[in-house]
Each structure stands twice: as C-alpha cells, then as structure tokens.
Image (cartoon, protein in one colour):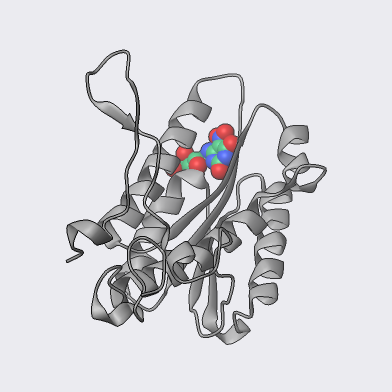
Amino acid sequence: MASADESPRVELGEQSASHDAPIPTHRLPAIGDIEGEGTRGCDDGTGLRVAVACSRFNGQVTGLLLAGAQAELDRCGVAETDRTVVWVPGAFELPLAAMTMAGTRRFDAVICLGAVIRGETSHYDFVAGECAAGIQRVQLDMKLPVAFGVLTTENLDQALARAGGALGNKGTEAAATAIEMANLLRRLAGTSVTGPGNAGVHASGRAS
Ligand code: INI
C-alpha cells in the first residue's frame, strides 16, 4: 500500500451540474507511464496468440478489414502460427464465436471484424447493437481483450472509406488495440503499481 505521502495528488475541479460530487481533473498515471512508455501502448506482439472472428456478411468490406488486421499483426510480430481466423455468417454471430474462442483460454486476445450497413428497416439497429453489447460482454465476462473491429455505417461508401480507404482501416485499429490490451493485461496481472514488484516506481510515476 502506498503511504499518504506517496499517493498521487488529485486536484478537484468544478462541481458537476447534476451531482455534488467533485470532478477529478488529475488522473492517476497509466501503467504505460509508470513503466516509462509514455502515452503509446505496447505494440510488441511477439509470443501473443490472437484469434480473429470475421463476418462474411458484406464480405467485400470485411475482407479488407481482415487484410488490415493481418498487416497489423505482421507489423507487431505476431507469428502466423499463433493466429487463428474463423468466419461467421454475420456480425450478430461474432459474440458467440468470440466467447467460444475466449473460453478455450488458448488466446491472449480476440479480434472481431464485421460491417453492419444500414438498410431500409430497423434490422441494422438490432444487429449493430447486439453485436457491440455482446462483444463487450465477452471481454468483461472472460477478462480477455476482445477488440471491436466492426463498422456501423449508413452506406457502403462510408464502410469502404474505413476499410483501407481514405479514413483508415478499422481492422488495423482493432488489431493494434488487441495487442496493446493483451500486453496491458499481462502487466497488470504481474505488476503492483505501488508494490515491491514494480522496480521501485511509486504511483506518483517517479522512481524511488
Ligand atoms: N450482418 C452483418 O454483418 N451486417 C449487416 O449489415 C447485416 N444486415 O444489415 O442485415 C447483417 N445481418 C445478418 C446478421 O448478422 C445475422 O447473421 C443474421 O441475422 C442471422 O442471425
């Protein structure tokens, strides 16, 4: 436990309009800061085992998301033999595939890729909403990073722009997130912010 002197100072800002609780304006240092990595997450994927669930629906888009994710896994050094890719019919099925792969405990992270494009009915809303909620549920229940690489757009052009077009690639972003979170969880599992295992670094972020 940190002594009172070692505790990071929390400055209090203005009162919130709806509650009396003060709003903290100073946050505790992030683990990356504590360990000297600044604001960038760790993108070293060496030795990480990564599962990808990719939706076949709107495959013209999801194939591009998968290519972006694979390129990022290459860049991060995730071995091809440490990757598993499965296909599901649509985005609605992504949470079940993610949950099943997470349950094997063979992976350090799961990446979900899909493209939900608005149609003429409210079907889009149910598919997109249940997909997002399901994926979040998997990662919280399984305590495993499950990245949300699912586009939810008004039309195909918007989706293509975010699948390797002018606005980046959501699959690439999801893969980067998966690697960063897998590394963060590994560190959090083995590191105490103020304890002796943290190489003499206090919660203040300063070395002792
Ligand atoms: N699945 C998608 O991945 N994207 C969509 O845009 C989509 N729309 O619009 O219908 C979609 N529907 C299929 C859904 O994911 C399920 O596969 C289906 O409902 C069977 O469970």
